[in-house]
Length: 276
Image (cartoon, rainbow, N blue to C red; front, side, top):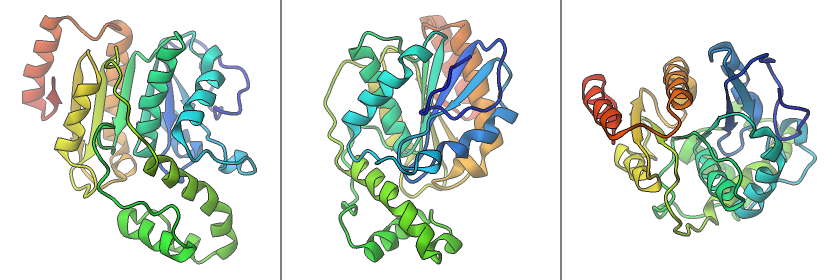
């Protein structure tokens, strides 16, 4: 069991967890978006949604606008929670943070993930085709976020007080991703499983496939029905896949022998998944 930690949103108590799943949100999101995952994940999985500063119960804390200090602080905060096998899941911005967190843990010679789930995000070594918007005026920034992601509900946009509370963290999140500079390092020594939305206009199958270059272990890719926020519309299918992969990662933490990986490729051809 994890002790009190402001970075982790506490939920269901697992008496005998076998693996921890740290979850990182998309831009503007908070840890509560993962809370109901505990109802679907098996009891052997301890769900650990990450609460970044500047949102929900950490609203009064300044948000990070650069990724390096964020992953340094996060790695330090999680150091004593890595005593079990663990995986990291991140969607969109969260996928980028999860990737850099895994590299930061390796730099510190701390335990690294048994599995990294990346969702709805281009591979980190790809150039971002979108123009930066985090420094634009309030109205222009909101308008561009809506054009790109349609992620702010109408009721929220019409509530000026609520928008003033949410905008600093949302703008900081965009600054974090738009200022990101990829530096080449050795590939991660853990399997990577990528998820994408079939109808996502921002991230294609080919964009996701390039994540395979970031691991020296196995790589898998699965496209799910939905647009950019398919993790909500296809949640049950997503969690079923995550549960299966977590079970396999704990049973076989090294990522699989060549024979097992070859078997996964054959199975992938049958079930619509892409495996490398």
